[in-house]
Length: 110
Image 1 (tube, rainbow, N blue to C red):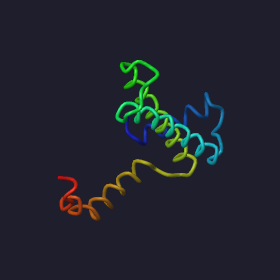
Image 2: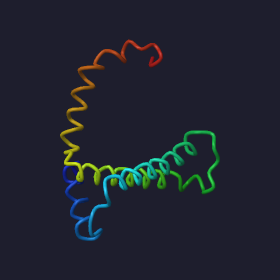
Image 3: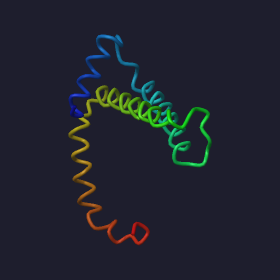
């Protein structure tokens, strides 16, 4: 699935099953909530905090939260007229131009 296809699929789902989009401001709040849930799993898997669930379930839970973050981001892109596939390509171009050599010279990354 391409990012553009994902945007189309989310749009179709929202318009048929979800009835309509929440406001962009509401979706921004939901995005922050989903990022917090993803963060909770990240700090328990890769940090020092203990899980209240079995460690075997952790990867699936993290995967689910990452997908939730992506879903809401796709909603926001649709609502604001952003083609995420095109925007990501431009971000790669910007990073390659700006950072093409910069990180290679960072001693901390060696």
